Image 1 (spheres, rainbow, N blue to C red):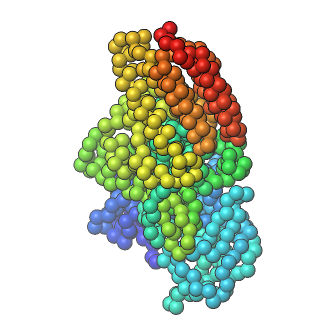
Image 2: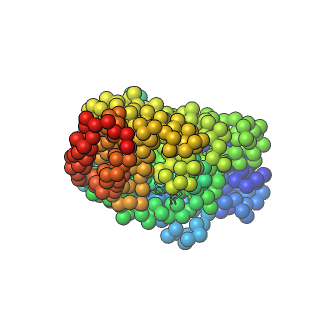
Length: 595
Ligand SMILES: Nc1ncnc2c1ncn2[C@@H]1O[C@H](COP(=O)(O)OP(=O)(O)OP(=O)(O)O)[C@@H](O)[C@H]1O
Ligand SMILES: [Mg+2]
């Protein structure tokens, strides 16, 4: 293909226009100016093109060339991605830094994966085999805990020829040829895929399994499906980032793609410093061995925020196609929406709500629709992409466009609450306004995997919290003292659940992650306490008697004192609780008490 050169005639921040571009294509990658800045065609009209540039445009001049590439904005997918930190257009930051120093040079082109590295490849096809798109034909142990499955790219099928034997190869080595009768395709271990096009799959499946996050308020109260999408709206400093970090660390996904989009650089630094030290609680392996980071921080070009979102989700789909469960965290989608607003303003498009472009809603929909559980093309594997998007509504106002649109496309809504954060109740997820529409889908899974009465307990606890909310209104008006003992108990039991269960300290070694079993046993015993105390109060025992003992305190401290591998300790606490109530009952049985 002949590659054409256009000519710059307008520059407006990250948006530039060029003439002589009639042969260019929509969403094609172009190199702009003498320095070769990386850009993408975002509109074409006659022989003129509008280009969004993913690097700083300072110093660019009218008349400079715009070089077409013949390629759509794409990601390169293959072994060597895990553990990497990429910028929004999939350039490995470490390589960029080694080439250009701490202040990244512009126009630098680097390969997203290392072509020099040789991998031990286990090839499972032979000459004469018929292979089809999506089929897994080789494996590479990319890290000590992650096996990369090499697939035939979508759209390719045919007869295998000249296949190599298993051995050590670089990703660009031709390991076989695929002959479809007309053409011969050279099969390597990498493939390219345009980021704006969702990767194909055989069929979308019902989501029926939760993504376990180790965060009690999520797993027990508002679970997210593997293949589902969640929205975390929260005003400034309410804990969005810490929560996203918690998910990245502890979720039971096979691969994590963490997109830092337009947020402060130091938040990514925390991840970079902390993650390599952390071990996966399931297999003891370093968490970086399943993680890919995409960093497009606030000091990096605004226009690359959108690219970072698409890059992240496309990489996630690729691992999904291998049959893995992938979780994508995007922090914060509001910064992406703001970038859309800025670019749209420069394009002089007609603004809609709060200056955002009219297509804000469809862009968000396109992104969240890429979540899902699927039967992959050409292999029997089931994989999923779950997406958790943080939203930063200005002033914490959830009626603003990004929050309201995101809410439409996600089935979990984890609303972070300023007053909870101020009271240092973390995670500051408001249990009254948050919801998960996934409960019906995962009920059976919880019932089989954890316990039949899991959701019964959850519903009881939620009812208790709702009743507490009603009582809190009364307390505000007249104080707690006027409440009868049974209502005082409701307030105490709700407080136990709020402090002892919903609050979870991400900085605590023991409490940062709670296994499902621990979550279940904790909630169960808290509700047993409520039940038994209620019974005694109905028998006339004063609440002061119940609060006198140390049992409530023991239940409050369970989260810190019972580790995930010693959940049986809760049975011992249960015995303590039984004998405490038994003794009280014995003491007061038969006597009328109103002390
Ligand atoms: N689960 C948690 N456990 C303990 N502390 C927490 C937790 N979540 C949040 N915090 C505290 O709240 C602070 C702010 O959290 P974070 O940076 O995640 O907020 P944010 O919503 O991302 O803020 P911003 O709007 O500035 O991006 C943290 O530095 C930490 O001190
Ligand atoms: Mg943040």
